[in-house]
Length: 385
Image (cartoon, rainbow, N blue to C red; front, side):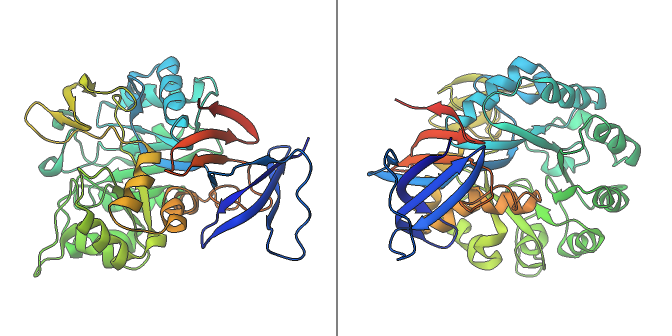
């Protein structure tokens, strides 16, 4: 049965104030601007969103946990806790993200995510963050398990995935075996990202020539920008073809630094991510990230030594913050959480925007961009009060 919405529609390039959208059998079938003389009349029974918007569902390529659970728990029920937490905040699809750990623990986490019941946000693949990183910028990663890049280990991870899974690997391109690993990963269809790295500009450029194309949580966990040594940050925002992540929680990156990245790299090459740990959606308290205890207070997650340990950010707040703190227009902010990650994962033909033929992954947002309803493939999976 076809379902119709009359609502302001957030498209990648504009907001259609008087919009009309329909979906059927899990796909969008109609998108109209009612100011167009060719637009059909609003069908009887169409649902009207008078004070809010209809937006594409958000996609998060970097999320460790939420709802009191972590993907490294390697438990299908933990996966459900994560996916059902984030779907309430507008995330319709995500990459299950692992930490630096022994190989067998990474593999157990991948297996659990594959076995988990399909509830909440869809697991679209895997983001393996570490273990091939630089201990100088380890952040909340455990240095005990940092090791040189191994093509054999990579192949064992990927053997656990399915044919439709997307793969994203964060590594330090200056470390032993990294360039060979980058070439191998790219040959297998993975996206390779620089993160937890001390790479110089020249080392990052060499990695980009080998196929690396992304930077994990830009500014955080990497060599910074210096006027005589542009470093990882300078390379990430200037080398051709690179995309970058921003954790727009107002803690990890100053709003002015976010502006620098967006203006330099261009908004179409910037993705919003949460880097959420298990405390996302849980409030203040004591939690864990991998083996490390974490204190969450006032929206900040920190190790006992004071270092940031992931975030408690959700994608709805990331979009709100990029509008409020950085001053981006609504279509651009939403695209950074939907269309841009869809493009990175090679899913833009199906996801990321309100267009005929795409999956009916929709959000009903209120005027303040809070999520009222999340729809995945035409199915209502979350409806707020």
